Length: 234
Ligand code: ADE
Image (cartoon, rainbow, N blue to C red; front, side, top):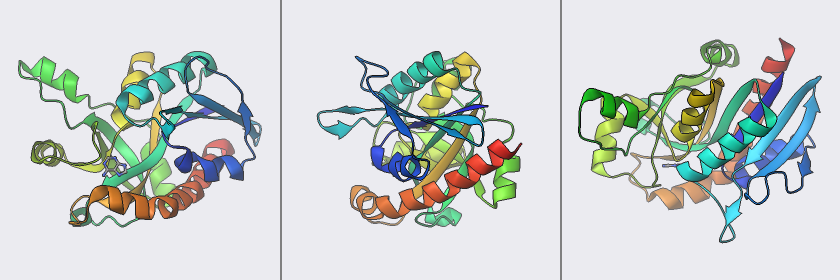
């Protein structure tokens, strides 16, 4: 089995890369900035593709996620894409900092396209997840939630309206973009998301995100190890 992680930030992937002693493949996607790491785990191939950097910072957001996902699938032909990273969540839904969720769907929450239902449906996305996601979540004792994706770390009232209307639980900046590419190329996608901030905590998001990033990424590594064990034991 070939498993490919698509991850936005180095901090999100580093504990995992270190755990598996993954090798960096230099200039794998040059001139694109995406970075490739690889390892063999229990006889299976594991890849991590990072969005890469621009202006000395990790590229976050939908555009970079699309470039990385498309590049990864076209070069590596994975059987499964895993979008792993951090997210915001809601205290009102029982979320905690560094709690790790499995996604049960992904959509965009900041696309407001007037028109008939078909345009609206297309712009919101609503991408399906790998059909083994629920069984995996149950076995590992993880909660599931709907990933909603936008281009900003903060949240405007109109974003919250869409999130509420569609039962969104996990707010990120890449998930639906990765799901979009997977839907076009028919590659199953699993979401593994760790909470850095609570969107309804009243605290400034970037401050909360920065404070909890390392803690959330350590929790993400622990769960991803369980995910890999689960997937490669089959
Ligand atoms: N990544 C981590 N926290 C986030 C948030 N609140 N919104 C979007 N992306 C995030």
